[in-house]
Image (cartoon, rainbow, N blue to C red; front, side, top):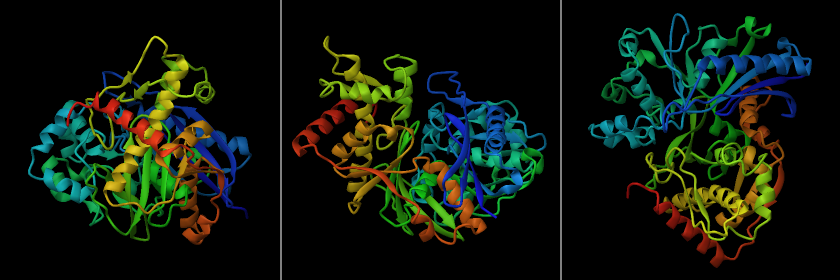
Length: 495
């Protein structure tokens, strides 16, 4: 019997279901856009019920479109937007508040209060993370303290917290399983990287009831079954993994020192650091890359909040482009940006600045600035931000890497990848399958169920579609980058 793997990829801008065969060829996919709401400046929310219905609809349609029955699916893997936070009623499954999305910045006051606690000095060592509105614990606290009656209900054990993976698993299993994996747990600010458990001292200091939290399993594990009422036949869920870690798996970055960057709504650069937790001195994050059979592989990550969202803004708000591919065409029309720099701090700045109060700016405008200059500056900003992260890794002592594997919707843009190679001064490699997030979930689902026997077997699947090598002269490279740093300094609100 041929093996078919269902990958459920619930991202910030869309929900997708994809079916892969055992050779990880895409047999079919179905996608629905997600609706985000912006109630106030810096607030970003989504409707958990819309997310659930979209995911279920995608799964149903991909089966119909491929002509496959649910009983032909060997296993399913779930990958998800990380840090996004939902709290719901254990009996009814009803969320107590909309999903607070990962780049929401509303909880700055909570972060300030937490930074005054004695435990704050230990948080980075314990969790690898910083006190920032980005992380799930801060969002949990906001809901507990701002939604009427929720804290009391949580303390009575009536409520459950989860990132999107956990919420979907709960719904798929009809409320039977409340679980997450180690990668998603490692993004909450509540999970101890060394013990691989929820940290009781942090929970106590933050006044978060431990009854809210899911159990933590390996990234490939027996997570339960999709209820037969959902798709017509029970399907084992054998993998759950956060989207950036899933992309790392999809890019087969299984050896220490291998690195990938995913260009979706934001940009996330993650390096495999093997069995070592690297505590950055440069505001990067230590995290779990994946955990298999109880063995943890760690990663070092930099998070950029604005990447693909810039293109969406150019298209939908400024209307400088009609479709995303127009950005490449426009960038090619000019030789440079004519001194224009675009700092896309729509919801603050992520690594290495971690400035939630910063707001975006377009600098260097003159009467001769054209739409092409602005579009090109927007694309260049994504590359400069990537270099920011790599410069931090160098300062943390990491210099032994040769290539950057890239994925995500933006990497179809050849101009962008060439400029990226020029600015980071390394080879940039795009794989034949750029759907690496879904592919990573499928890989681990197949690994758990026996479709694949080892990581080594999986690594042989990866192939490069294109390689981009640097051609820019060093003096020009450094001049461009230093002017970028000056532009960022203009909007950073703290030293």
